[in-house]
Image 1 (cartoon, helix red, strand yellow):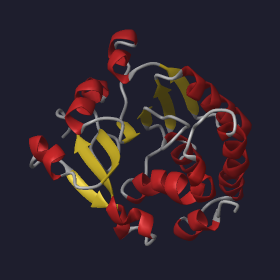
Image 2: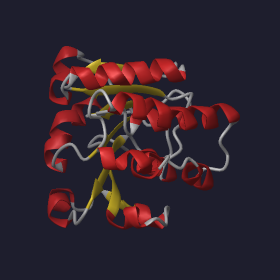
Image 3: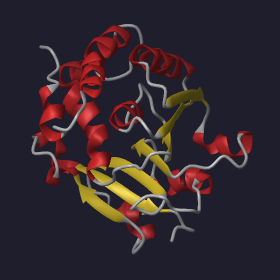
Length: 219
């Protein structure tokens, strides 16, 4: 069964024709590449727009990135959440990183096919980035559940800029599911937790959350 793009346009009706064409192109691109390297679960192919594209765009229901914002997508895998966000925010700069070279090569191919000029991809571990690229800073770090929140902040906390340019202070935007109570205990009073079911009505999103953790030096 083909993936259903209409789920995206239903929740984001303001898409331009170019954005629509790029989102629609994702189905063919990921079907092609997923047959060659395991980017997403095979059973998820028909649910690409719900479980990967729309899930990634949950971040856009919480913040609309201003032009010039710099975003780091850690553990991007096949390009999520970075590629859908880059389509939606063409004036925002995205760097997508992953430790697996084969996946980063596919991300580069997808980016080239879509002609996304606001995306770069690099094979590197998040915990190495600050030593290999000293001084390089981002407004936000985004990710989909690659590690425990405390460990993740240790990896990327030093990569966040101090000066805030968006409505939300600079920080981490982390997509995760399930009961996060214990995992977020160390951050009591610092984080905001958003239920994606408040934005999207499909059953898939009932347990999905977005954690926003401002940078320690954020104002």
